[in-house]
Length: 138
Image (cartoon, rainbow, N blue to C red; front, top):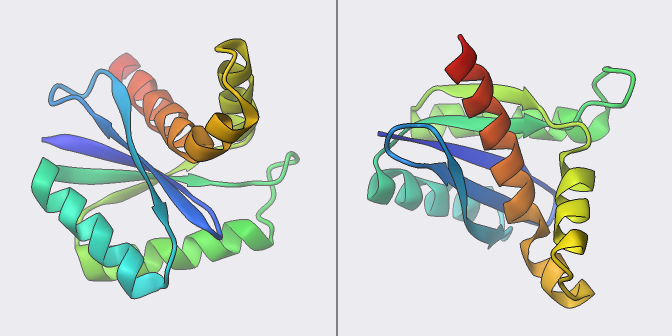
């Protein structure tokens, strides 16, 4: 059974999956958003295909820890996700994950064009790996 990590944005959703033992996160894909039903349908396909039993979704809090407009949008997405896909969801504080992902891709010397294509998937990996690391310590 795998865990899925999601970085939900207004235009894309970065998707990562854990290995079957739940130790490491790997990037899977970036979904180009075309509407809630389309997005949830693609996620349902991934859940079924990879036998996902839980989702970890990044919550974009403000730097001071408060919930802003984008976090409210993500919370509404999570509500719809849970109602339609029926797997447990945990929210993960994703502050600075996109910055960290950008830094990692810069260090890998990827072009701006290539970074843009995979930044959301890399952020999903960082969200999921943070969750897996914490779960492994408990």
